[in-house]
Image (cartoon, rainbow, N blue to C red):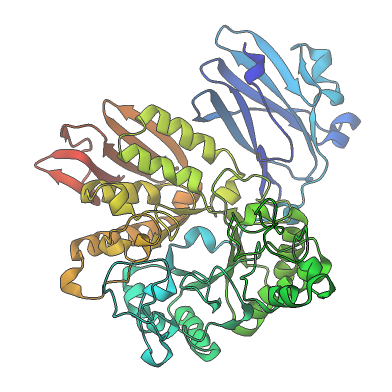
Length: 574
């Protein structure tokens, strides 16, 4: 038995309070090494008093990564108190016990020793920090406001270009605004999305608005607070939630706080709002390096000292203001992984106190267990889960490695948080999906379908529903094309059907069992519960394959004459 492959950490992603008296438990073992895992558990007080016996349950094999197998079960714990240990049997029949003190021999006296067991002293549902129930039912639509639609020309910037004209540059302005978004809410409702994620809308000199001047004001080129309220009200009337984007890692150089630092130097009342290592602020004459910290290496975005109580109070007030005054439903926080955890706990706690069902999302490009739960975010932007999908359909990952990497990410977080992860195949920070897949519409549709079958809260980037192209930033931020005869209408129809399917099956896709099968060059993803089975079959080879199901597929791409073309798929419900 490969003991080094066995791992369990209580009160981590390996245990999840799902509801009152319900505890999900996971165990990791080496892959292809273990034949069976039993969990033995009891209320420690009642067991030691002799009023109850140990219960035993065989755990089910779950997902497997490239090197490990996961085992899983859900325990019912009437008293909310439980101790538990694992009896592990390998493929040769050898057994070992595993608990808080490590491994122990499988003999009766060891199983009667409470010190050998992992302890869950008391299960508090409040400690579970369960994400809002509505999130797993949400299909998001991300909007880059400056490029979505120009609703009011009177607020256009002075240097505005004709809509969609010319090549997009980093300093291009086209006049997109909040009234433009409101005017197209019916289009979005028809598409089927029920969550709007808006990139920053606060005052800023740039088109992207990630260099904020004033967090309490709408950028005048985007409209007014009345315009924003109309947008929120219109979205809510159509059953859509609204998520704003906040940049608290850094401010823009034109912010009044930073300008005061430039003017007054060490005497500025905002001097300790930033990470400054020399005066006056600027470049060191010897090293030519900035003497203050910034986002990345850009001088125009000074990094904020979020450990300063005054900074914390200001930023918390910002987030509370837009919830209390305008009724927004969620916040996405930019560069969340570079901000201290103490601040995030203070902010998230303050927001949950005024809006218990607020969705709090952190931006991160890597696995981020330290940001999820523990008083912080419900979820993060799940690039480690979604980027392998792109590599899979571009032939950069074989199916076996794709499954291993994906399963590793699916096991990275507790199940309730995994249901709330923000899953997107393209965003304002990445090349567009169609361009990444080299214009291949069949693979484009397959990738979106695979995304919608995975746990999490999926997102469509504006224009993806009509197969907009675009390379790296700023080319991925082109103006939305609103001319129907210039849009890929068959793609929009496909995405509309796919979103409808996802929303109809949201609860099922959040909780059902997930299994992978590799059949030749086909990757098969199956989701199952006691009532139904949903299966997506994706042809990753270079030759057509026979259609693989007797059931009539509800959605396909690249399927004709009972064959699935390379890059195509069929989706069936049984």
